[in-house]
Amino acid sequence: AQSVTQLDSQVPVFEEAPVELRCNYSSSVSVYLFWYVQYPNQGLQLLLKYLSGSTLVKGINGFEAEFNKSQTSFHLRKPSVHISDTAEYFCAVSLMDTGRRALTFGSGTRLQVQP
Amino acid sequence: GAVVSQHPSRVICKSGTSVKIECRSLDFQATTMFWYRQFPKQSLMLMATSNEGSKATYEQGVEKDKFLINHASLTLSTLTVTSAHPEDSSFYICSARDPQGIDTQYFGPGTRLTVL
Image (tube, rainbow over all chains, first blue to last red; front, side, top):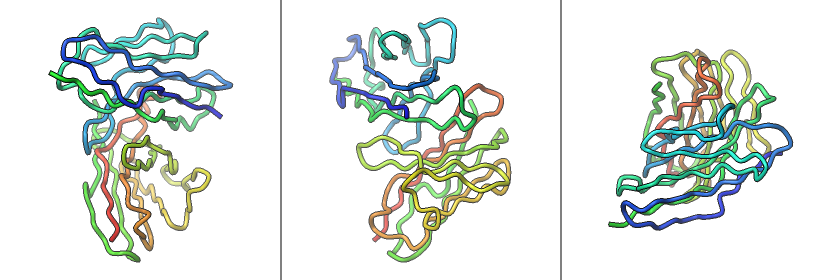
């Protein structure tokens, strides 16, 4: 079975500073990789996804992530954060070889941007 | 992007009653929808996969007789929590798979269920 690990439950950072949210996964088959953001009492919004091709993926709101197959990682980065980036961020995977395409989520990282 | 709506956004009910939550894809047809449950400060856990015109596929440990799922059309899936109890209180989120985009799921805004 596949699993997703987000080691940092909370990441405090000052406004305009860079940030990296870590994500590692485990799977016996190839996966697609995703980052979602959740604002309070809302559903999830897709930030970016890796399906194939270039390992550096750019998403919305200035976020990017790099797929590292050897380290089974998909860390999310932003060079300069804003107060409005304060939210919960979830890394997720889906298996390539199934038709069901359900997502397996990590436990989430709370990004807290301070002025 | 595509829009998925959920109704109601918030519901409070008494123990023993049933609650129905609707999930609609507003501008695309979704043959597959997913239902997730999220406890406070925790991640989303997949409950079931809803397929239009067929029975839902439930994850291990999810009681299919308690959480009834109906996917009667390509734009609507419903989750009914039967005989709700306080431990069923949670945030329920649906997602719809976009058949046009590879592995793209669009999430609804969620439904906060509180069982007294």
